[in-house]
Length: 90
Image 1 (cartoon, rainbow, N blue to C red):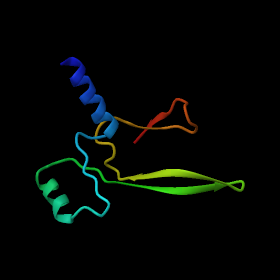
Image 2: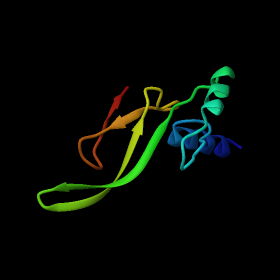
Image 3: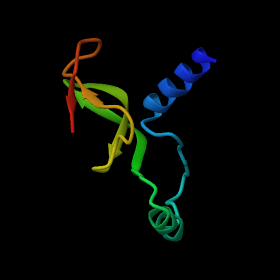
Image 4: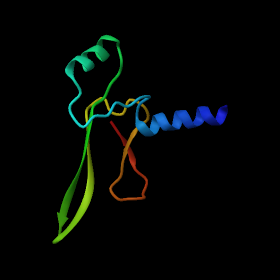
C-alpha cells in the first residue's frame, strides 16, 4: 500500500499534474471554460519534434512549450548540459 502511494505520487510529479488530457488538435474552449468554472487548476503545453542545426550538423529534438501555470505539481528544473545538476526555475 505504501509503495503504491509512493508510485502514484511520483507519477503525478513526473506528469507535473494529477491528470493529463492529450489531443492532436486544440482542446475545445468550452471544455477549458468548464474546468475554470469547477475551479480546476490547469496548464497548457505544446510538444513537437523538430531539427536543430549547428556547425553543419543536424540533430532531432523534442520541443515542449508550456504556459505560466506549468508545472502544477513538482518543480521545473533546467540545466545547461545533459546529466548535470540543474536549477529550479519558475
